[in-house]
Amino acid sequence: MMNASQTESTAAASVNPGEILRKGREANDWSLAQVAGQLNLPTRTLVQLEAGEFDRLPGHTFARGYVRSYAKLLGMDQARLVEAFDQYTGTNAKGSEVHSLGKIEQPLRISQSLLRLAGLALILLLVGSALFWWQERSAQQGSRNALNLAHVEVDSADGTTQIHPLDEPEDQAVAQALQPAEPQTQPTPLAGSTASTDSPPAREAASAATPLPLAPVAPGTPAPLAEPAPAPAMPVVVPAAPAAAPATAGTPAAASPASASEPAAGEGVLSIRFTADCWTQVTDARGKALFRGLKRAGDTLELRGQKPLDVRLGFAHGAEVSFNGQPVNLAPYTARGATARLKLGN
Image (cartoon, rainbow, N blue to C red; front, side, top):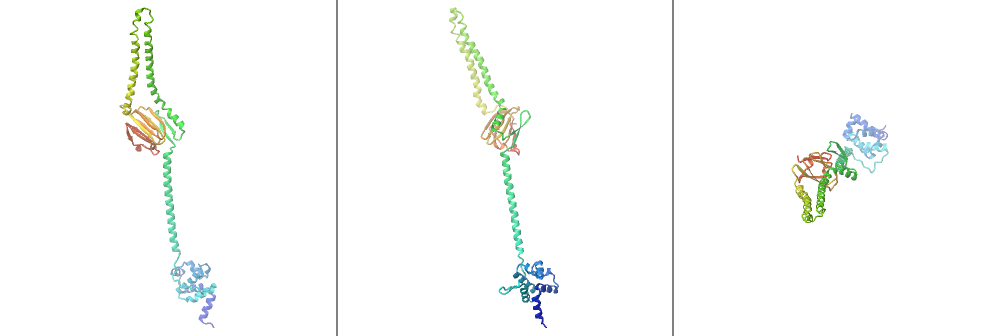
């Protein structure tokens, strides 16, 4: 008849050590959750340990430590259960002394913290990248809108609205700019035409003066022959009138520099310097279009007209305006699309 130690040794050799631990736990009336809390192990690991599924554990070295800690918690012989584990799994425990692990630290806590930090860093990186992309896109869109206007709407003097694209060919833009400028150039020839109309009377007077000396020559009497001396005085006096006419016509020309620097009563002098392409329209108080067309970068525009002057700019950022020698701030008159409309000389 075998004694108790031989019976325990035989049972250890033939029985799964996890089964022995399970019976010891049940004898102490402990649940798996209570033992898992004591050993700081997942409940799933204890289930595998009691079922003898040691191959599903991290390794025999860790499994042997679990068995030793479990036996210590239940107050059982640790060495005998470790030996039963080696016999059950066919593991040689010599050369690898395994000590009791006590409470096993759970490595997942560190990894979870690292995962949280890595996730937070990734979220911050994505948010920063999105903000940077949005700012760059807004800046590019603003510059594109400022430099590449699709079109500009201009109200003409007759009340109609004209739409002019700023990217139209230069020849077409110049042609359109020159067409409304013809009424402006016509008054200039009118001034010249008035001067030229004055010349025919002078020619007629000269032609009328030339036959005067011939009239006394027609008679054959000697007495009229002595009178040609006063006859030449007539042509001399008659051309004096045309000579005086250019002199009088020249007086406004001499006075024009003074009038160019100082506007007349009720008039205003507008000066615009263009740093970029800009559609421009200027209308005086009578509704007369002083200028309407496309101005290129580097151009200047000098106009004089009846106040107030209505100024419309298709791209206000590319124009520097001054009125009667005083600079004009365009910011209060500039719309969101970079167009501006203002009245000067109210």
